[in-house]
Image (cartoon, rainbow, N blue to C red; front, side):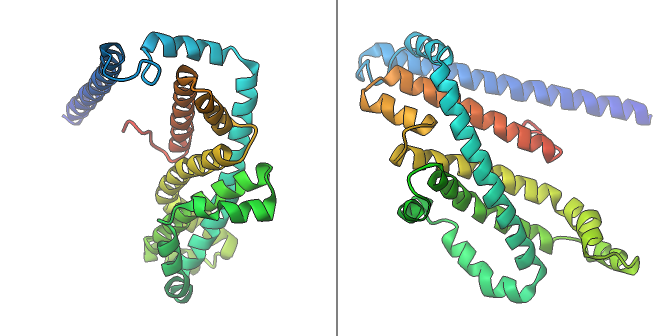
Amino acid sequence: MASADGMKGRARAAGAGIGVMQVRIVLLVSLLAAWEIMARSGLLYRDVVPPLETIGWALVVLLSSQAFYWNLGVTIAEVLAALAIGGSVGFMTGVLLGGSRFFGRALEPYIYYLGPTPKIIFFPIMIMWFGVGPGSKIAMGAVSCFFPIALSAAASMRQIDTVLIRVGRSFRANGWQMAMKIYLPAMRPSVMNGIRLGLGIAIIGTLLAETKLSNRGIGYLIMQAYSIFDMPRMYALLITLFAFAIGANAIVGRFGGHTTGK
């Protein structure tokens, strides 16, 4: 009986998964069809909304260029460095705020107030501190991802079951053992969701910095294509950037123990 119920549950899950995939495919096909109709209708400038065939050819040319992969590597390195710096500082800050009622009440409101602030306003300060090289782009991405990770870590610290903490203390666990055996496993889902959000914001912050003042990176290539009005190349770059963001988010989601499709 239990096995039959399990088989029915798996069948329902498989059917739901197929339904979700069908909806995604239909939505994607509809968007592409709408784009192609608009491109060939003449309602908008053809150079602004080029046909899919033109964008596809530009994408092929882009992916066959060594310069593209070099610039993509620059952007990936900057985003990873920004996530490592901003994420680690944000996590430690969140643990401090969530573990201490005093520090939480004293400092957490500032993070809430500054979190929604557009981080591009900090870019002139980053340039003065770190120069016009990669340092300012990494700093921009780090500042961007700091806030969501800090807030998610603080919230997850407060959601840890006090029973688990008492059990750890009853076994005379030291601080390192409490962190590795109690805190981190309990905080993992919320923190990984914060990291996924922080990753997206780090990508945005780094690319914004690259578009403002840089001579390398995907953001620079996008602005270069826009400045010479090469719209097919610009859209091709945006597609590769979109694919990179999806892939990075999926990798982080795997570490979180679930996928975006579930």
